[in-house]
Each structure stands twice: as structure tokens, then as C-alpha cells.
Image 1: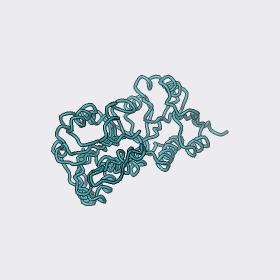
Image 2: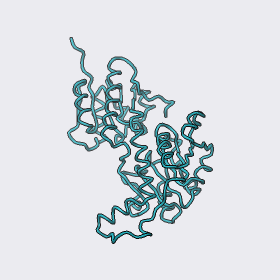
Image 3: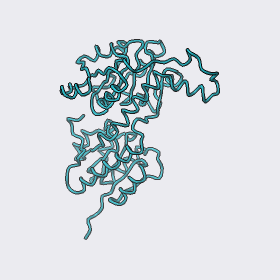
Image 4: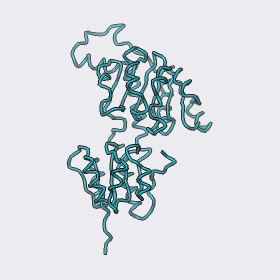
Length: 328
């Protein structure tokens, strides 16, 4: 007699090829709508499923985990970040959590460089002038920006994405500096021609561009607070493709308005989908709707990792991408 297929609830629309494969392998409940599930719907899903496949838009807290049904044994997150899931409570309740690390590394690093160029070369301003029909022709002083070559880049968080950013920055002729919880091995530093700063304060005070590439944890919340942001040079640019909570966004807005920062390139925000409304009116700020990992290839690879994690669990083994406390 064939064994019962796992009940898998997916909270958002995924690429069609991923949804098709999930349906072939499991008893998958897919979404017709791409709207985020309500809290009540998430709880209902957790009460009926063996496996839940959430995304970063689904905040799963201790109260919701406490209402989970007895069959829920795996939360297979579609994405690398898990700060929206109370992993400790899940583990206490016998629920494993897995993620999809490493998939979005190259795509996100590409976007970091795109934002750097967007801000320093004033690309959105030029685009707006062309689309509005206001451009009157070339001028020796029109839309003057600055070149990336020769600038000091400070990378906050030298994991997979940080190192991918460093490789790209070197190709642009930038000087690579970094701050990380742990210093890289000498051979890794040499390969990236990267300079390590034990003191974050000292690094940010000397950088021309600061790229945020660390996760959001209790220890990184407002790591770039008002005091630390004040250390930056007025000519410096800040790029964030990681998590909005790492930066005190209101303090950054005040500095941008006062000319104490030259610009910002943002793909993530501290409060809500768009962050501080004043950011929208600043010509020296490039804002994107969390597009850092948005490639067809990346989204499919994320789905493939989710499927491997679920299939391995279904076979009675530990998911290869299980999140453990040491990772948080």
C-alpha cells in the first residue's frame, strides 16, 4: 500500500516549474492569489499541514507556532533569511526549519553594484529627464556624478554575498575593506585584496561607499545607528540590499536631508514596504522594491532547494539546509 503523501502548504505563488514539481511529489496546496496570507490563514495552514513553505512576508511568531497542528514537523522557508520565523520556539516544539542559502548570492551582488552605479552616476535622474521630455541636450556639466574606480568600499558582513560584492568591486577598481564577526582566512583576504577592520566605527569613518550585507539579528538591529552614521563622510554613499532593520532609517533620512550623506541605494526598508516616505522625494536616493534576488534563475533554484529539503525530510533524514542555533 503506497505511503500517504506529505501535505505541503505553500503561502505565496512560486515559479510555475516549482509549483508543478511540488504537486508531482507531494499533496501540495498552492495559492491562486499572490497576496500574502493573513495571520488566521497561516495558523489554519499550520494546523493542517505536514510542511509549511512560507516566504519572508509571512511572520511566524511563537503564538502561531503554539497553535500548530501535531503533524507540522517542517517549515521549509522559501528564502535564505529566517528572521521572520521564531526558530527557537519552532525547535522547542519539535518543528524543524530549513532555508535556501547561497542561491541569491550572485544576483544580490549584481544589484549592489547596480545601486552603486545608480546613485553615483545619477542614473534615475537621467532616466526621469528622458522620460519626461525635459532633456535639452548634452552639457559639459549636466548630470555630473562620480566614478567608482579608486573609491574605498566598506562591506559590512563578509559572507557569501559580501565576498561576491568584493569580487565585483575589485573589477571596478575599488579598494575593498570589510568588517565581519569573524576575520576571513588570510588566503581569502588575499584573493579579494580586502582589508579587515576590527572596529566598525573606524571603518565607516573612512569609506566612500558602505555596503550592508549582514543579516538582521538582535545583535545587528540598528548596527548603523545615528551615532555611527554620523561618523561617515558627507561625500559617502550607503547601499543596503540586506535588511532594513540594520540601519536606523530615520537617522539616515535626516542626514541625507542635511547633506551629511551624499546618497543612498536601497532595496530594503526598516518600516513597511516603502520605508520613510521622505526617501521618495530625494534625487540622491535610489529605491527598489526588494529586487535584489529577483531573477528567474534564482527563484527557480530557491524552489529546487525547498523541494530537496522537503524530500530529504520525507525520506526520514535531516534536511540539508536545516537552520541551527549557531547560524542565527
